[in-house]
Length: 281
Image 1 (cartoon, rainbow, N blue to C red):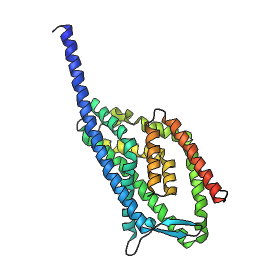
Image 2: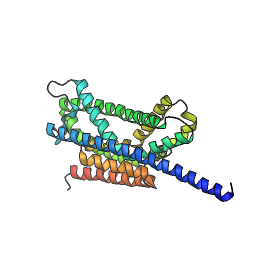
Image 3: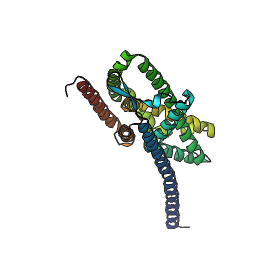
């Protein structure tokens, strides 16, 4: 075969490989889009359910969501399970746009390294990723329920909650501006680098990889998650804003600067909360 023929064969092989990759990408992001739509629908349903339950007026001029306390006939395990279920649906909707590209790169890195059952390992990693977020949801519920009990039993503590909220928002803004945030943002960006050295034990390694990525994301999103909790865990506007912020800082070409800009916005919101609490506006 002459050189022209060899060149044509190579071009054909590259085109065929590219077509296969495009097909895999279409299937992968199609499944992610379906999961996003389902989780968004479940989150909207949960928001409507929470709004129908109403809120309890508290000393200090604020209201507390009833999601933190058992209603008539409910047990604490049932309330916790309901909250974690809503939290998982919400986190799937919020984190999928930012996390899906990392999973795609992970799967392609596995394929290039010669691994088999790449799709299974990729989705196992995603399962472990959201298991970490589910564990965080359980921690958030435990803290929220404990605070709710204290607020109901101690009016003085309840009056201090608006001030605590302002402090949390200001600290979250400062965390967005820190090198700690920049470090974990880089960790989430270079996720597949360890494929060749760590991921040799198939399913167990995929779970290990997903859980580590989930931990990095939890740390990276700590400030934005804190703002969401202060604004209202099931507040649709807050969820939309936090989802957009997480996606932008992960996927934008200069995510570090995006994160710092959001930090300045959060600090500004905290200062505005202080001005409003002082009755100046």
